[in-house]
Amino acid sequence: MDLTMFMQQMVNGFSLGSMYALIAIGYTMVYGVLRLINFAHGDIMMVGGFLGYFGIVVLDLPFGAAVLLAIVGSALLGMASDRIAYRPLRSAPKISLLITAIGVSFFLENAFNVFFGGVPKAFPVPAYLENVVDIVGLTMPVSAIIVPIITAFLLAIILWVLYKTKYGMAIRALAFDVGTVNLMGIDANRIITLVFGMGSALAAVGGIFWAVNYPSVEPMMGVLVGLKAFAAAVVGGIGSVGGAVLGGLIIGFTEVVVIAFFPELGGYKDAFAFIFLILILLFKPTGILGIDFEKSRF
Amino acid sequence: MIKKEQWMKISFVVITLWFIWFANTHFDEYTVRILNNIAIFVILAVSYNLINGVTGQFSLEPNGFVAIGAYVAALLLVSPEAKQYQYAIVDPYPFVLTLHANFVVALLLGGAFAATLAACLSFPVFRVRGDYLAIVTLGFGFIIKILAINTPEVTNGSLGLNDIPEFSNLYWTGGIAMIAVIVVLNIINSKYGRAMKAVRDDEDAAIAMGVNTFKAKTLAFCTSAFFEGVGGGLLAALLTSISPDLFDFFFTFQLLIIIVLGGLGSTTGAIIGTVLVMGGSEWMRFLDEPMHLFGYTTTAMPGMRMVVFSLGLIFIMLFAREGVMGKRELTDLLKWRKKGDK
Image (cartoon, rainbow over all chains, first blue to last red):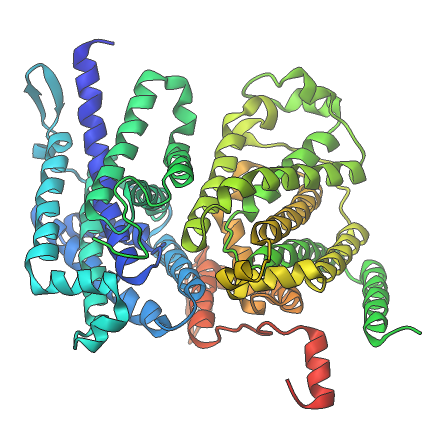
């Protein structure tokens, strides 16, 4: 293995890790405010991929407009899922919420399966994303480079919203203590809906990246990615946006690097995220950057 | 002097045995097949309910334990000669070919393997609580499936094992279901069962009262894994072929619907839930077929059942969170009728 190939695997790992990170942020934010593993988050990412596909193939939109359609559509879907399925259960035991989330997840998967078919559909990737560029001896498609850049840009926006705006302050306060937030005159339900919208929008971008990378979309594509992204969020420390990014990068790197160096372990690549998750929970129950989540978050 | 509760147990056994005999001699093959399925899922649901409903530990792993039981039983039941021709991807390990046992031993070993694994897993799994437990058990269930795909020397990889002798019949499935129900009920009504319920209701308070919560959780986990393993063996001997895809997360999801519909924590509820869900999913097959609505014929929509099922789960959670039985048992209902309180 020469240096060029090593560097190339690093960039691939960074690219895959960025995708996990984008989805993990949605998990970590929802968990932060609701203490809910939103099992349907991976499927919202799938819906994002599909909306992008419909935008390009059915509505004949340019790529950028299709991405915008995917982001807006997924954000609305995420907010709707909160309004319909989770809000009525705010005072219910947490297990009810978790079961509802599993129900929403299965509903989205199966509804897309029934109405659009389970066969993967080829995703029309714009030519400029498939162009191969040559940077200091590394040859790779534009998409592999653009993914981490867009992720960093979106992360900056999220951090700005969280730490520089009133809404961000409300979200952080909500993560800290729901009861007091209501006393302070903040409409907790509105803020939670906002969190679902933000997380789902990021998931849609992740779904588009995924569709571009593998060029296809199918109803089950969100299941495994979603679970791995959740594992990434826990590994990084759930409730921490930085932790979600770190966890996503670790899981992405591991997957790419282990397969590059130990091809015989390829069959196990989907299990790495969970093995990591279990090890982290054994030795550091709050994750790498996690704070004691009974005390404070974000 | 036999107490009222013992009379109930005896009548339960007698009625069940009579029903098994009656069904086996009077019903057609299709109905018996469905009843077999229901009996196996009663075993799985009642034992899954022990850890999920009674102990309140949200485990998402039954698919893993069922897979272990099914694979162990299948490897023991398929004769060495038949095995020789099945392995298509790689040659099996020599010891795999020598394995052979009769049905009872195969089932018990399947259960024992699952229970042993559960005992080992309880150390990492019960270090965490609540949502984390759900995701860790989900992870373990997933890893078991990945292992089944990636160890073709033992499991024949994604092709799975075929030509498993069809040992399961209503006497086996129904009889074991009855035993499982009695064992689980006895555990629930023992001091261990009270410890499990204490863990569910308030773990910190239980610890403060001196309950060994780890022991209670592990006992529930292992018992449920044992019966899930046995159920897996029965399933393998009913379906005659198994593959890793059979044991993905959907399997757990189905059991989850069953116990939630029946009422988390109620054994009677788990049985009712099984009959409703398994019977309902047979009945709802028409949803997958072309339908005639208002003079129009819709195209066949395979998978429509699953959409209806997931919507059903959401609706139960939103509007009837307690399920059919809540936490009550059949005996509670009888008491309520007599005394009019509680």
